[in-house]
Image (tube, rainbow, N blue to C red; front, top):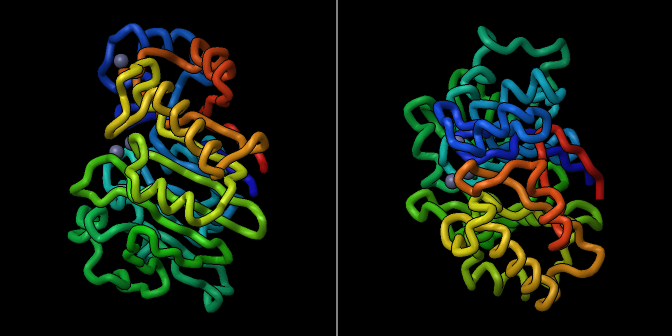
Amino acid sequence: MKIKFLGTAAAEGTPALFCSCDVCERARKLGGKNIRTRSQTLINDDLLIDFPADTYLHVLNYGLDLRKIKTLLITHGHDDHFYPFDLVYRCSPVFAVYPDNAADKKPLELYLTRNSGKIMRPYFKKERVSDDEKAISINYITKFKSFVSNGYKITPMRASHAAELDPVIYIIQKEDKSLLYAHDSGYFPEDTWDYIKNSGIVFDFVSLDCTSTLKDGAYGYHMGLKACCDVKSRLIKEGGANGKTVFFVNHFSHNGGTVYDDLVELAREKGFNVSYDGLQTEF
Ligand SMILES: [Zn+2]
Ligand SMILES: [Zn+2]
Ligand SMILES: [Zn+2]
């Protein structure tokens, strides 16, 4: 399975749009991997996780080809993860012309919880969208109920985040590979721990919410590096990970108190890789 981090910041971006704090000033000065856009990740070439306003920037800068995406998973309805207004541009021939073999065209399969979908309802008239029924199919998911899309087995699990949105983290499996994608998660709720333990899955790759990076007390809503260490230890202890599992920290805020260049060594000492925009790897 290939994974490409397209956007690795929390909601405000790094540097944050209007901010003059030390972290944002340092990011502006250093540039490169210290510049982070809003949250999005590509699996292989056909599964996309989250759809922020920066999606178009990811198309331009990182070769994201939205025409190849068959499955779109939304973690939750915060705007750094879900900006549905740009999906409208798939839904009319005025905005999106399809090639001659359009008869083969299948809807983009969009998966999200009903509460996270509330934001898009004014823009999509029906659950099967707009004047082009082949544009997007909207699928409301239930926590801990697996589904299959384009050959991926996907399981949403409960996150400790904005409860009113019914946010989820995802297990994504294909062939013999498995990924745990946890943004925005906080320290996992006990029913999520139980599900992982009972599933018997040993993850090949784990990406954890590290929004509050250097804040040791950050556990609920968002995690810092200390909480990520606790998640990693518990996963290993309960069998969800082993010595071969690759761990990444991802989704960073200026409130976490550091930038990529200053974090990468500290994270490595604790057994974590640090994501940056455009990073691609395979597992
Ligand atoms: Zn977020
Ligand atoms: Zn700042
Ligand atoms: Zn959020």
